Image (cartoon, rainbow, N blue to C red; front, side, top):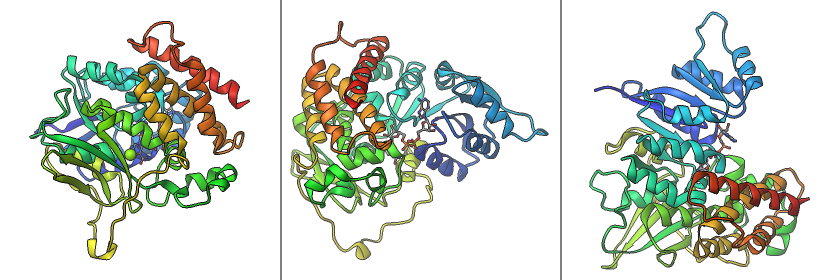
Length: 397
Ligand code: NAD
Ligand code: MG
């Protein structure tokens, strides 16, 4: 059998590195064709060398120079593509079968969409793409025969608990007889601290997730629980589920990655270590199960699994996400863009942790119904995204 040829968008990130780790265990069936990164060119060069990538994409000419400086002179360098369009070219490359979309933020939308439009198998980690452009993205999957597999652990778990009979995700979901999707959330590092102390928490405290090791942006999103809000919106698009049939449950141990509740009263859950290599391996091997490097879960050692409802006073961002989903596409674009800006300012110590929710709320209030046209194209989505960012920037000053 011909090996599956991969493009990893955002290979130097947390998901990108975990993907390469799984790929390295299956040299006979998985082959890296293209890697892309926005920074850390030395790491990208290392990855390209060890994976044998034929193509890399970098943001600009300075990055290209840094990449070449890190590349051994005696070895032929891979083809280097430069600029934002290079991401889309890599995603749609005829020599690529499967695209791992693991860029962080709405910056990953054009390339994820390009992969869907090119009819690739798309392993989607980049949830912001669905939040900003869910209907556009799902339509591209449908119209171009792309094969979509969710990588976000919750959505991967839900997909595993749905009767998909070996087929990838299509808009034909939801499956019949599903009552609710139950998205589990750890509650992050601030689940039990005094709410009044949240104003003063530092970026380091916010990024210290109790169970998962992730990039800094998603770590802050987990601390505000905006991440879970983005995941509710993501689940809505992936599984065609109305918001009232998606419930968030706090489960501090992060062993159950999510659940599906059926009409007959059954609940199916997917369990495993909190290690992204499991959902990544599920996506890479689908429909087969392949070795991921993740050890088994020792249930007797764990002893107990706990659950509690989320507290909207502690996590206002979760509430704002449900409101944005109810309000529609424009509000979801604003929610996501405002959050990206606010998180960046928080990470640079320019606004307090609690300022993130305030910036998002303010942007949602001021920008509702502000789009000149409904965001039905990539250009229109990016236009509204840009103006929401500008607005959030002003609020953060
Ligand atoms: P990360 O910050 O660790 O890595 C991001 C990657 O994207 C890097 O390779 C970086 O170079 C690249 N990148 C950043 N900005 C870019 C830009 N403007 N243009 C092109 N490339 C850019 O992020 P991560 O934690 O790996 O998360 C990646 C995506 O996966 C996010 O959407 C996140 O929500 C999602 N996700 C991550 C996890 C996790 O465990 N880390 C779990 C579920 C979902
Ligand atoms: Mg998740």
